[in-house]
Image (cartoon, rainbow, N blue to C red; front, side, top):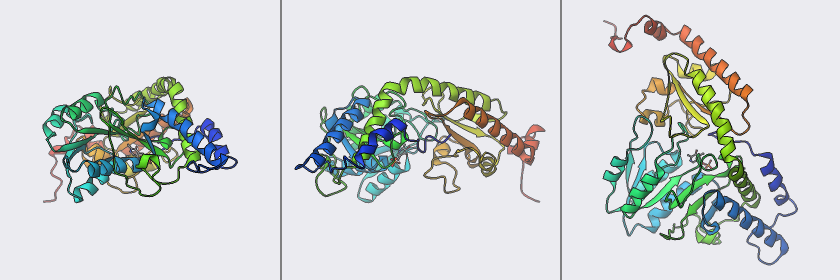
Length: 397
Ligand SMILES: *Cc1c(COP(=O)(O)O)cnc(C)c1O
């Protein structure tokens, strides 16, 4: 139930990768022998598969070590490349840490960054974006779909606003690519980050799409060296990883739609059942949302107890990157949830190999845990007695 953190490799992906660890181990940049040519050919083929999934040209794909690197390359690389033009970047408070921290980094180098708030449903306010645009705005960075609540931002409208003001549009599309239709041409995207391990490919490989025409976009390399990937990302290519990434993309091209329909049905069932619990609330916009994600708050339940109560299920209360800390999710807080409600939330992320039995097991365990915790909770008892908890003066006199 934690597929937004990572996914298992599809066995078909592993099969495609295996020869590239052993027999076909060549360095894709070796120009003088068969081993190198074999590696290069495999990378070229994977580049086509990866590009096709997002309707890009293969030349527009820059392979990286994952989306964290792609996010960094996009933000730092655009800032460095276009700093003569302006220093203003617009992003949102609910972005992934890789985007937010890259923005923090360029702020130290002289960038001015606007962090847009989101509406109660997790979507940005387009009027607020429009109002934030300045003549110095060089980049708008808004994620395609959120990793904690699954909401899909109005990408076409956002890219149109950026374009109108002469700014580039970058989107962290990690959670959307391979799960829902992403089309860099139709969506008007200039740069896009994605990663294999969130779409049934291997960990440690991802890509940055960099548009080559209308407009021709360039980013300053953040990794210097042999000049691989058209000079934008040096380093020997992870050939087996890239082959796996390509295969994962190809599978998504063919199966994304049927996967979404099947997984969506399971998610809807899970959500409907859990929302039969009193005082449980769905977080984020219900319509503009990924089909496999549900984020639900259970009021009057103590958050840590809840995770302990469902410890037979791989679940998280927020993103994997922040779950080590006891801080409530900054994404849920940006939606306006208080600390307590944010703490009592669970993020469900179903996947390609999730079964109906697993969904039913999850429903039962969560229902049981919530009911048990509430039975022990004085706050719940007071709520049931009709006492308005907000009117209570908790201080001793
Ligand atoms: C997982 C994730 C990332 C980081 O990707 P890695 O390949 O693990 O570095 C970035 N953005 C979003 C939205 C994510 O969900």
